[in-house]
Image 1 (cartoon, rainbow, N blue to C red):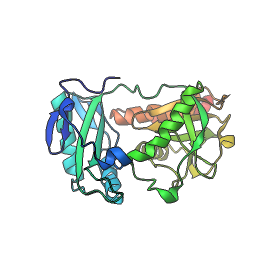
Image 2 (image 1 turned 45 degrees about the horizontal axis):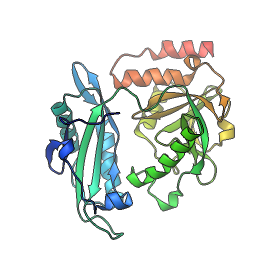
Image 3 (image 1 turned 135 degrees about the vertical axis):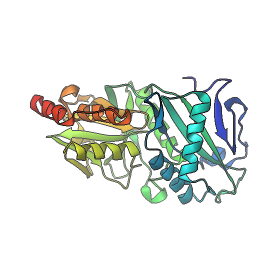
Length: 304
């Protein structure tokens, strides 16, 4: 996938520059220790223009991540949002994935950042991150102990664990991994939160051992609007295998059907599941389109 070309413009360290001309210090703490924070954000083509979905929530979290990691970072959410819209405008992007990242200056010691630099990158997007009907494998890798990390911060170094789990799954012929926490309960996918349906109820891992995603929060808002019961709780892969349906959700993935877990297929046809209903409701929400929730819900429940 091409993320940029010779004409791509990014915001970097106080100015708009060509992506090919932007560089970071090879002695940066971020490069050596994974000491950087970032966000994944989507913009959608709305009414002939573009609109960033939940910009405030994403940039509030970026600022939170920088704060708990003791990074010097003074941009406001409003400033970050304006800079992002300008980045999209300069590249003529509407349907885009946006990656703001805060990196730190040269520092070979294991102390807080001395100086930070903001980059805002974007590229055109058509949900190519995850394919639908994914075959998922429970990973041998576990999520880190939450006592050792700020689990609700989106920190670059955390994602080494995700790379290991994702590649292990692909090397074994699966599409994606499912990670457990350090106690053996289901946590999340390498880059997405997880839900499963059983008996007309959606279940999702409780906070504490996961990155509680903004898409996850949106799914739960939709459940409230659609009167779909959802429980945040601990559960094991055994509880999830062979359930009615399962899905991953995230900014890039949106809502993606899981075909099976550890070669055990989910029971319902996807179009008859609550996951499918949430998938369609989510798409309508980000595109600011009407969604006949009552009609769709009644149809799904009647078939199921």
